Figure: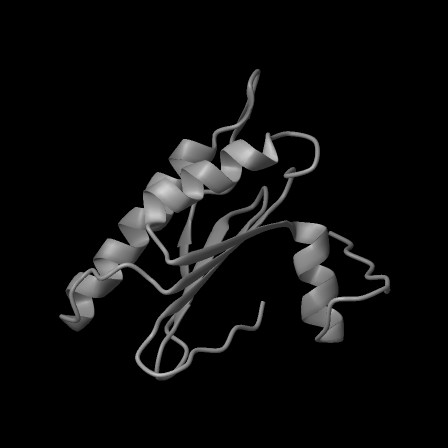
Length: 131
């Protein structure tokens, strides 16, 4: 997922699949890719609160390492496997907004993130995700 940052603001990109959660911050330059366990699916669907807690922990750890403080990001882009069928989209958005505290939050399915990442735009297209 590609994101851009302007000024001193921070953009956080989070991609969640079955194999893991990957988080990367973008400020003056891209930060390292941080990882945590992936989507956990139970009887009630995906445990979004646990994923948000994992992302918050990664952000807090990164802020402590670079001594920049734990200011909320300007933008969070949250891409998640199972968003369309294993979670309530409105509830995912609410949980991410409350847990990460960004000024702006975008929640999309992994299919949409893959398409935008592959084509560099929002519009018609196709991506084959195998694996």
